[in-house]
Length: 79
Image 1: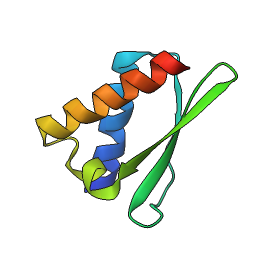
Image 2 (image 1 turned 180 degrees about the vertical axis):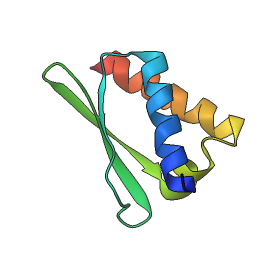
Image 3 (image 1 turned 90 degrees about the vertical axis):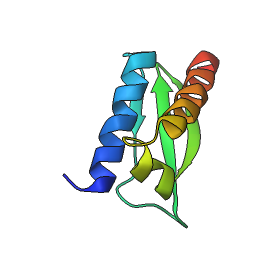
């Protein structure tokens, strides 16, 4: 598994840890070094932007994981 796939897998783990009913769509490739990630629950959908570097470093950097987790919790609460 390459770095990008590890980061995507970790992102999905973080989302499942917050709310298992949230559906996630992560693009295959970034646009302008950013991923526009869709989080959906029922008919509600929100998008978050995560940088390519943050996604790659997510499995290895606790501070990035903390920031991503906080962002996901806020978005899920708004769904």
